Image 1 (cartoon, helix red, strand yellow):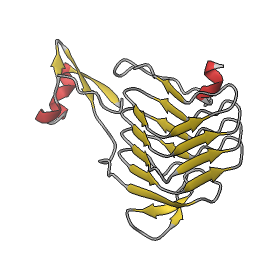
Image 2: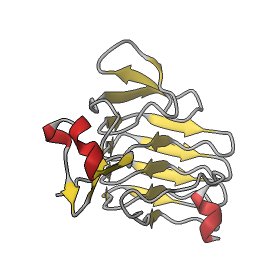
Image 3: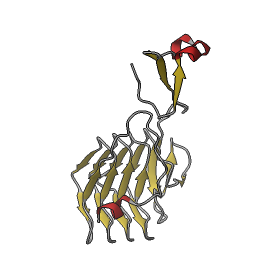
Image 4: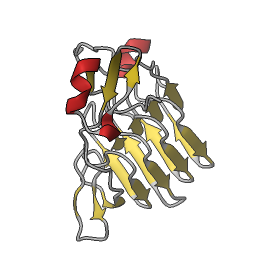
Amino acid sequence: MVTKTNGACLTVSALGCEQLSKKSRLLVGGSGLLCFALAMPVLATDFIITGSNHSTNGLGTIDGDTEALITDDAINGSDTVSLGIALTTTAEQTVGINTVGGTNNVFVSSSGSIVTNGVLSNGIFNTGNNNTTTVSGSVATNGRISDGILNQGNDNTTTVSGSITTEASSSGIWNMATTTQPLCQEVLPQKPSHPAFERR
């Protein structure tokens, strides 16, 4: 049995297996493959966006604490985000709500709205798998190549009962699946790029 992990892998010869604990052993023929995770358990966080300061994710409470800036990388896996106010961004490449890490839940209530005003400024940008986005309010992007909702990953779900408005070269909802790398394959680092450039 091989369990998919974060990809940290170690090949172990049959002679070297005695150094591992019995629970860590996995023999396949004459050699073994041990994959292990080096990460801490993921803890879910509740974000409530309560103010707009023209930055990504705005201001809000984190797990009920006092209002503070929500950094653009704070919503980073298994988190819940609620928006019931008007959230506006003004600079280029500044999205409304940004999530990473996957399994995040974003809720825009009927009283909530997102307005972005720059090129490459998506309303909601989810990176990772199994994210859920529910929009009962409105999302409007006023810049080129600025999608209402951009999901980069697999098995993401978006439900809209409100409205999405975009400008030229933009989509209301853009789902961009990612390819799965074989377990333990070495992946060379690549220069980061915005996914919108890859499709235009």
